[in-house]
Each structure stands twice: as structure tokens, then as C-alpha cells.
Image (cartoon, rainbow, N blue to C red):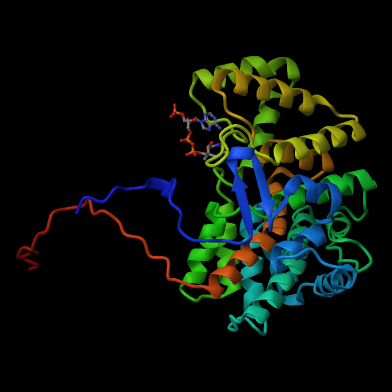
Length: 374
Ligand code: COA
């Protein structure tokens, strides 16, 4: 047989989705028909989470109910808290997030129920508890006391409270909320496709999200926001930036936070996130990284015609907010749980086992020869 191999499934349409659309022609990303730019301007992360999961923006009562359930489910079990406290301090926080969701699956009374209603309830529980687990490790590996979630705070405020014991200025919270909105969903990217693939064998939502977190960890996907900050630290000062990037390009290095499989002339999420990154840099009175940002971006476009993706501005934004580098991708997880869950529910709704073919390129057909074992 001579089938054409589509490595990386590039250009292959594998299914339909009603969750979001990446529109490279107009450089836009829409969730359930709304552009992310407009959602960032007009909505909170909670409203967008509801939209991604349910298909419509919530009315006042629906939002109130959704927020109440999200707040009610924030606590993690004593058992999970104890495990997190006892994990090796040098564990990768993405592995901690993955383990935490896996344990939540052991504890959830509805794990084996894959009905749409049960999946929706489990999705909200995972969304509520995962930030608590991530913040618990953020504190415990620094030798600090774990801080319990507070019901009167929003999703974003509560995360800062659990990590730092205080809630920052409203502008910082807004920038964080916007980053979560931008990270909430992105069609058939690798982690979402992983979640859908796991689901397609009729496995459960905790397993699918655990697998998706493992996929997001990689530096070609979510891990890029951390790699961006490593690069900025290596550049150190704006005056080093041009030389550094030209040298890296000469050496054919991959520049993290640039390029995209679908967008070829810019990621639609970047202008919004860049605006908030610049705001945060001004508030923090630390504009070193925003200057480096501009120089590297200009050279990448000029020399390679490659544009930044959303991980480019989020990395330095999270750094300025006080998060450790290796917590940037777990923050991405907190937001993307909404998109993954919506896709898992959609996959269960019209399932077909995902099972592609491969072209064999190994040893030719042969027989086991007699082996003298004496
Ligand atoms: N830095 C330098 N060169 C890059 C680049 C980058 N970030 N992204 C793409 N290129 C180059 C490739 O080397 C390739 O050049 P070539 O044709 O001379 O070999 C060309 O652009 C096409 O790239 P390709 O690897 O085919 O694109 P892809 O669709 O397979 O990859 C990414 C998309 C996102 C995996 C890729 O751009 C990348 O690795 N970016 C860095 C990681 C990152 O930021 N990931 C987050 C994604 S949201």
C-alpha cells in the first residue's frame, strides 16, 4: 500500500467541533463564536469558563450558581494535601498537577460515570480543585504553610491568595484573568487531541485530563512560556538582546514563544496579552523584560518572518507577578481544564475510537531460526 504519511497530522481534519475555531485567514480565535479579544474586554474568566463548557455565556443567575459551585469545590482532601506536602521538593510542578488530577480521580465518587451530566459536574470539580493543589505545592516546596482557599474571592484572586497569602492590585488580577481567558481553549492542539484520544476509548475525564497535562508539559506546547523566561534571563539586559537573537538564529536555534502550527502571520491572542504584559511591567516598575521583548520580536519578524505566540507575553507577565518559572505551565493547566473538558464532553457525545494507521518500516517478514539454548 502507498498511503501518504501526514507526519504530525499536519493539515488533517480529524473531526468536527463546536467549541472553538482558529481562523488563520483573519488571525482570530473564537470560543463558541465569540472572538477572544472581545471576551477579554468584556468578561471574567468564570464567565468564559462557563461559555466554553456550556456553549453560551451565562445570565446573572447561571453565573451566580456556577461561581457558587466552583467556590464550594475548591478544597482538596487531607489525603491529597498530605501527598503534595511529601512529594520531593524538586518535583516538576506539571508532574505534581498531573498526579493531583489523577488522585482526584481516585477520590471522585463519579469517576466511572461518563454521562454528560456527571462529566460536567466532574469538570467543575477539577477546575476548582486543581489551583488549590498547584498552590499547595508552590507553598510547600518553599517550606511554607499551605493556605486554604477563600470562598469570597474570585478564581484569580483566590489563586494569588493561596500562593502568596495576599491579593494584588485589581490591574494585576485583571491581567491574570485575561491570561486565563486566552489560555482556556484552542481547538485540536496536541493536549486537547490527547484528551480526545483517551476519551475515545470511553475512558474517564480524570484520565483524559491527566494525559492532557502530560502532553501540555512539553516545550513545543505549554512548556514554551517557561522556556521564554529562561531565554529572557539568559539575555539579561536589553542591550544584549539584538546580538543574542541574531546569534541564536545563526546557530539555527528554535526561539521559544515564536511560531505556530496554524497561525502563520501572528497569533490573535498576542496583541491582547502584550498590552497587559506592558501594563504589569509599568505597575511593577520593571521594564527590562518588556524592552527585551520588543527587540527579540522585531528581529524575529524582520529576519525570519516568524511571529510570537501567546506564550511569549505570558512568560514574562507571570514572572513579574511573582510566580516561579516552572509554575507558568501549571497556570496554563488551570485555564485549559475548561477547554479540555468541553472537548471530552463533545467526544463522548459523538464518539468514534481514534485509531489511525501506520506505515511499517521495520524488519522484513522473517521466521524465528532455531536457537540452541544449551
Ligand atoms: N524559532 C526559529 N525557527 C522557527 C521557529 C522558532 N520558534 N518556529 C518555526 N521555525 C522555523 C522552522 O525551523 C522551519 O524552518 P525550515 O523550514 O528552515 O526548517 C520553519 O520555521 C517552519 O517551522 P515548522 O517546524 O514546520 O513549524 P511547525 O508548525 O511544525 O511548528 C511550532 C510549530 C509551534 C512547534 C514551532 O514554531 C516551535 O517549535 N516554536 C517554538 C515553541 C513554542 O513557542 N511553542 C508554543 C506553541 S503555541
